[in-house]
Amino acid sequence: MVKVYFAGSITGGREFVQYQLKIVRLLKENGYKVLTEHVSDDKLQKKLRARARLSKDYFAYISKHDRKLIDKADMVVAECSKASLGVGFEICYAAYHLKIPVIVLGHKSVKKRFSPIIFGDSSRLIKPYLYDDKNLEEVLIKALKS
Ligand code: 6K6
Image (cartoon, rainbow, N blue to C red):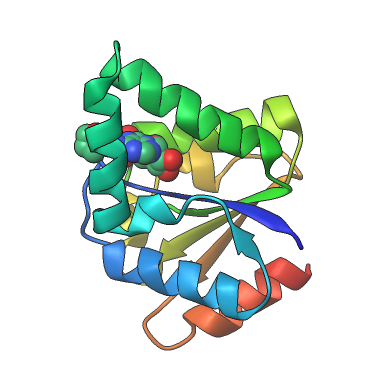
């Protein structure tokens, strides 16, 4: 089973969480193993935050937790409509350090606010795709096949 690290804005803002949830659902329906359901699922995130609070260093706990998962991944799928430091870091780490492919998804309605550093990157491993409310499934399947 192909292991996918799904990345999406958390502290950057949750405005696109409905699309994050849909992407994770579509990945699972199409036979992919999603390593990071906690990114789109607020309940799972709450549990992780509670565990992190009990640890010595809250931020280090979350960073280590997610680093372990991305190191196991075969690819990254990132919802990038909302700018996020964490997602930007994960994309760069995956493509330039791990050298695994990254599918970057952005909602057409906010194209003017896309990060040029992400959407304009020239690495052959980072591929941007635009979607709208009607074609997310079609765009994602096409991206996964290419
Ligand atoms: C929520 C609020 C404060 O802390 C949290 C708990 N957080 C996180 N739990 C798990 N992964 C996280 C958390 N915060 C960020 N990440 C990782 O960074 C995820 O893998 C996301 O893809 C990415 C989001 O980055 P920001 O900068 O938008 O948070």
